[in-house]
Amino acid sequence: MRIKKFVASALMMLIVTTIWAQEPDFRLRDLENQWKEYSDLKGSELTVIDFWATWCQPCIRSIPLINEIAQEFESKGVNFIGVSIDGPRNQSKIKPFLQSMGVEYPVIRDMDSELMSDLGVTAVPTLLMYDSKGDLIFFHEGFRPGDEEIVRSHIEKHLDN
View 1 (tube, rainbow, N blue to C red):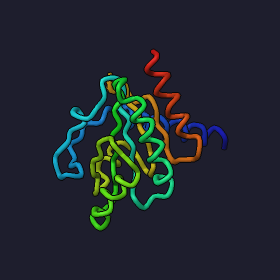
View 2: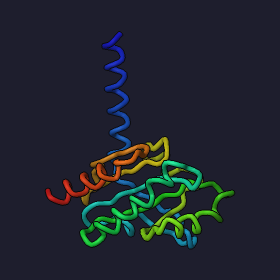
View 3: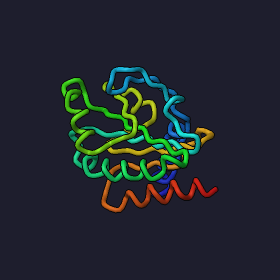
View 4: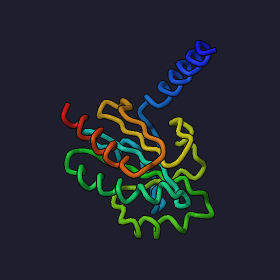
């Protein structure tokens, strides 16, 4: 029984890693309804993509901390991209929500969750970090107090290499 679970688990990780390991290639609209491409938003050193929604309580707790980290590493070639998965009914809430959180990094809309699905993301908040070669170097799902330090340490670790 343990061997079957191990094999199933290993196979799932291989599939998931293959999906996540691919550098994103997307074209989505921002909050001003302008098309934005990943190639225009990515950082020279690292790119952090944060999937969230206005109705997500862990997202509400994580976004101000993610914003602080984005500001801290902005001058070091680390770009953050927020991805709102809010549906059409919540579109009018996004801008005021971000203003109340003080978010300064670009935010795009994934209303049909197509990008979320393409990248193998199944929950919010989920954070993906890609290096300058386009390799996925960090994946984090959910948020608990202290997770921001894990994100910060992964950024520092990869900037030091």
